[in-house]
Amino acid sequence: MNRLIPVIAAAAVAVAGGAYWMSSTQTATNTTAVTTLPAVSNVQQVSSEGAEASEIVEMVMGSDDAPITIIEYASFTCPHCATFHESVLKPLKADYVDTGKVKFIFRDVYFDRFGLWASMVARCGGQERFFGMADYLMETQSEWTRAGDPVAISDALRKAGRLAGLEDDTLQACLQDEDKAKALVAWFQENAAADDISSTPTLIINGEKHSNMSYKDLREILDAKL
Image (cartoon, rainbow, N blue to C red; front, side, top):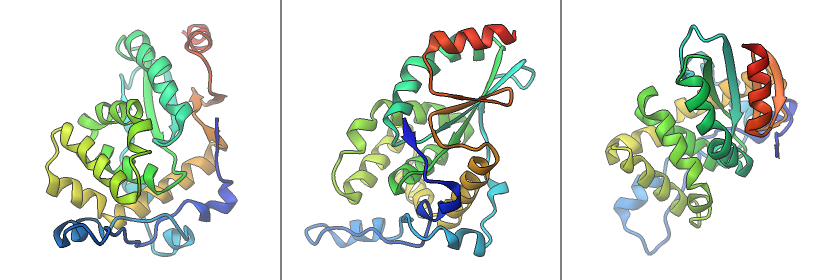
């Protein structure tokens, strides 16, 4: 279970206009393509520069009329989150979300710049592509997070976006959107503080906070509420 940096020290998860570089053996064209990806540092700049967390769209699946709402706090670089998405979220979707019993909301948590970049790629295709992209990024987490240096990781994330049908120009625009990155970090900070999130994955089930659990244990909680 990954532990969150305390919200009071939210400076540890932040966005500044950082640059990520190519090695000297790569082309000038490729260098330009990766020189403006947001970096993780100095989160204090987020609020001072007026990033609007309210601009961020909640990623939701399921009926608004569902009797149960689950909010998952997860990071794309959290191994426990990847396991949760495979062993818990997939059957949860089939048994409860698709049957109108659960409304499911995914909220990003940022431990590092790579998780932020992955979120920006997953959100690049909008609500209709997000959960498919999220599934892929969780399933291949051990591959793209270990692709190499930041350039290799950003290339692996672009590849994931292309597999989802996104064009290179669209992906680059999403990854270079520093205002969006700052808004995402501000949004994460507000949510984590409001729900007292200290680890991932964490579930908020009809307002009640729960730590990571098996699908069997989750079913018992849900069935008791139905």
